Image 1 (spheres, rainbow, N blue to C red):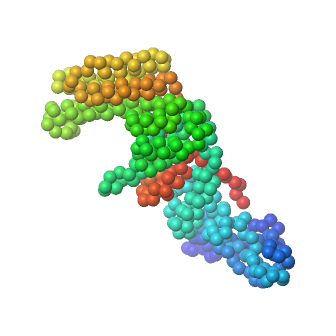
Image 2: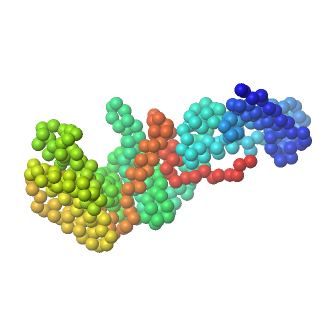
Image 3: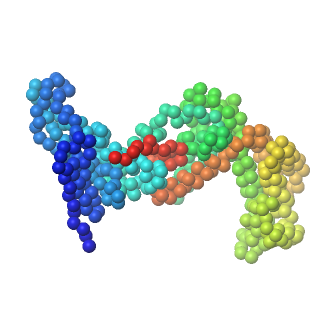
Length: 430
């Protein structure tokens, strides 16, 4: 049963500037307000104005419970007794000029977007405004308050760089280059944060971004963590010659795991003449192969021994051994010993690997070329591009909330608000 609307009126003057009346319905609320300051003096000639009439300004406000709320502000208009100019009382404390959403509504929408991970559609429904009105106003407020903060780049000494797919299309994926601030992770002061996002993925894109930064900021960068893409390494070497490039453990292990997966697929095709299917020995152990030896159960050990007993799978067994050696080196608690063991593994697979192990030979060429970057992670503990991948996962979740993005500028702004480590400047609610 639908309840009757209720209307309440204040009986006396409102010295505190709060609502002077409210009208509640099951699906909406309206608060009537008035401007406390008279504002009767002409700013043009200084003469006193006389009241002329009253107009009402409607503003979307933060929801009252589940109800979208509208502020009805009674604004008095004055006419100057000297020059005849007409003006209204100042309402900028409630909302910016010509805005449709109050400052409280903007704060609520920004908190919902950044803290509660709401979609723009959900925020617009809570404010009872159109999607475009909510999107434009809240992103403008977020840009002003968070993204345009001049101190956002201060104190950065360690960065990570990676590519990220921001949109899937029939003509191919569209990429951006993401730059991550890894300084809090390295100093154990907090999580990593998204520093910036640039369209494209190439050496030129990253180089232009670095060149646009102030020289003082460039001089403060000590470490650049990256994957195996040589374009990022070259750009960092040219623009940040004093920074140490690090190919972090996450990407080294992923490269080795890819080599193992490619070897398994090749041997599968050579033995069966087709892709793996349920019941095929190599297909059944595809996930077990990528598990560290120290984490295997007895059942998984037995399954691997059964697969490796077949001489047709000897190349998979050899590649699996290299993969386990790499994991063992990174899991060694003694960094000096782990570095020595990893250096020995790289030298071993670079020197005498049978021609049949195509994937291992390719991996060895990459690791030998980037040996200094790979081994550098032992000299600078806590430097990893793993947090970069974690932020990429958060951005994937953001795309799911929004059901995809078409506008790159919109996506970059939303991503910076989502993963930039920012929090709105929360104010006590009135």
